[in-house]
Length: 140
Image 1 (cartoon, rainbow, N blue to C red):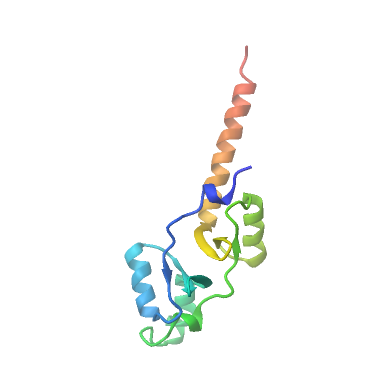
Image 2: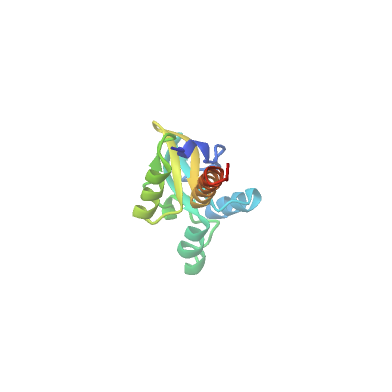
């Protein structure tokens, strides 16, 4: 069975709870990503997404240069271990209605597993099954 570690992003971009929403938005734009994991003393304490910024800051006309990540981040962070199965990861995402899972080894952030990663993983599994069925049904 494939594991989350085979499909996760390993170099996760992070931010501090004390960073401003403006600074965080600039990082997301520069890196072309939709979320940042929030670390406090190297421990993941939350996640901030583009959606959080729009719904909790912009739509309320709050000042993004004065609003801190701590005040709008989603917490606690939902996580799984690197050896978590794809089924377990999908179940966590469905249960918490989220698209991103932090991947933790103990308390250390080692990756990010997203709904896109899940789609890629399922696609590869489907391709492998299709190839196996094709091979089995070939005339001899």
